[in-house]
Length: 282
Image 1: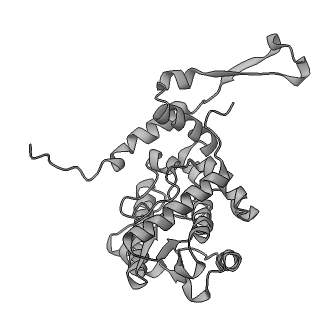
Image 2: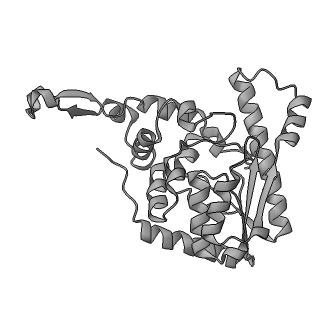
Image 3: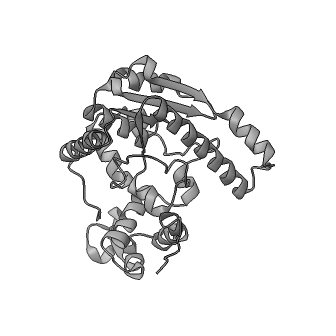
């Protein structure tokens, strides 16, 4: 049973396009710079941007530490008519590794050290994106979704740093709905979400739960203000095909078995949504 409302992709595309174009107009700028990983969020954001402003006003930066996705990025840019001179493919490994060595970040089996290295990658990318924005007199367009925002699954002053956020009101599963409507390539839609922080890293592998479940739980807890205990205790009745469709033969199971883990994850990172803490002089 789905609780999170489906989006109207046509209306959502129009609304976001209007938001992007009006925001640029209000700043007196015409260009956007997008950190383009080739993942579902950055690709969907790029498609939305290309519907809002001319493609020649969009600059993409593929800032890679591991193997670059050059053919995929080129394919998307070809579809959206992003000019070659507006495409940046920049390796960040040398810069990241120099900092890693200076900070003595070794033994990546330790989670905290993997996280530190991932944070450095995100912040190096932020430096490059804002420099390109200055070069091209542009705004940096962020690609954060609401699921990541509420879970605190972002690097402060890294991937969360931007001038404009077009999809931060959409949960991850809603971004997928929009991507399908926009005809984002299937290989991107089917790929496992990853922040690209280390080899074979995936979002859901880090979480220990799926976006599908997380979105339903986050929506109930934060948007509908439903108590966690009620969300965690809700059950569904599963019918066994071998025993027919008699409800008496059904088996009840928790609808959201990871509800507590999801909300604990979000609350543990909630300080990220509040910083910097400032002294109230009154």
